Length: 112
Image (cartoon, rainbow, N blue to C red; front, top):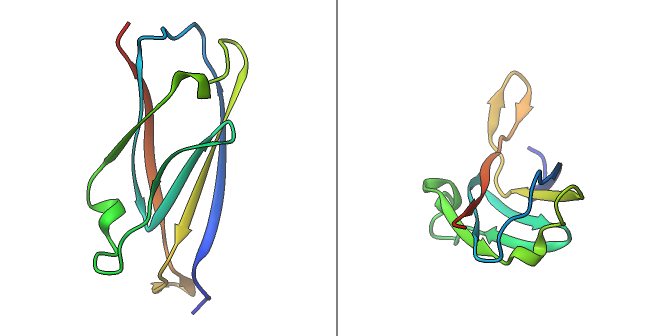
């Protein structure tokens, strides 16, 4: 089997169509197999590394973290989200493939 850990970095780019109020609460909600770090415009906004006693902790339920508004680029300017997904364990996935991993996330602005 391949050596672990293995990190896959996925990059998502997006722009905001309008201004987000200074009073809005910004959150990222996510779950990942196995560990993950979410980096928005060069700043870490959320991480999850499962403890040795519970390898499935990061995927067992959604995790939510808040982050400051100043991490976002101004309206119309590009934002860059890096999803650093870390596969900690490998297993035979069949068909000559080894290991599997996955992540889901959403970024929300709530409030005024």
